[in-house]
Image 1 (cartoon, rainbow, N blue to C red):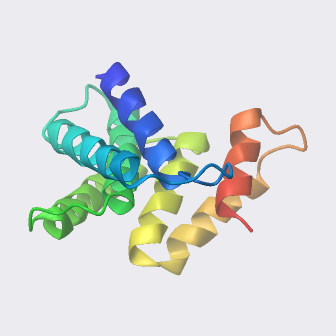
Image 2: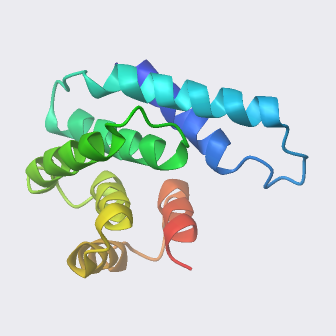
Length: 144
């Protein structure tokens, strides 16, 4: 399942940042990326994680994918709510980490619950001055 999650994460990133490199956005590429992200999210939605970290990674990836795509077969809102419920269940089971921070931030993006933002900020404030590349990217992506 890790390879499926990684593939969806890569496609979602490509969709979210399409055109940010100054290249023109072509309608057929935009449509194809949206379709691929949505279809892969739909396939992964039904997968069961083997552990709490994989569940958290799956929730982060799916929530970002559903948020990024324009497609909806009428049940996307319900699926997002179920993913948020799954996220609440796993949040207290994983340690303070980059993954937990990502999950808090993506859940905040859906709910605008200030407590989630505060908890994410507290985790980031606890990181030492020598941030990993991933931690720095997260800060740059989510904290203006």
